[in-house]
Amino acid sequence: MRLAYPHPAGARSHYDPHGLHDTGGLPGNRALDFLAAGGTKVVAPQAGIVARLGGHNPVEGMLPGAVFGWSVYLDTLDGFYFITHFGVRSCHVGQHVQPGTLLGRVGHWPHDKGRSHTHCGFTAHAGRKASRARIEAVGLAPHVKPISL
Image (cartoon, rainbow, N blue to C red; front, top):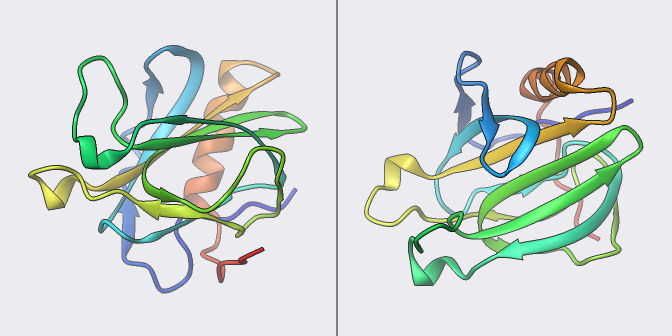
């Protein structure tokens, strides 16, 4: 299985490997926050199908009880990714993607440019331990050139 880091080659991005956390509202979805400036490209970490789009227009800012920005749910053979805090999405439901396929761009976090990031979590069919292993592997995956379809 091929994986890609969520921000492409050339992007100024980093994450804290000790910052592993659960995604609120998605039990077993283990996640890392990949910090990058608003507007940075976000790419698919693995091959799959865009199963669902969610969230809200980030121009509306922070809404009570909601995740900031647009979200993408990516189904794979062994689980699903929840990727969020997009300012712009460049994908659609039913789209087949490969590692590196452009999904959108990081949203500009309101009133705190240093907080802009991509939240990327994975829920494995095999359980919590496998979820953790996968998202940690994504953090170590290579930065690739973005593919626009």
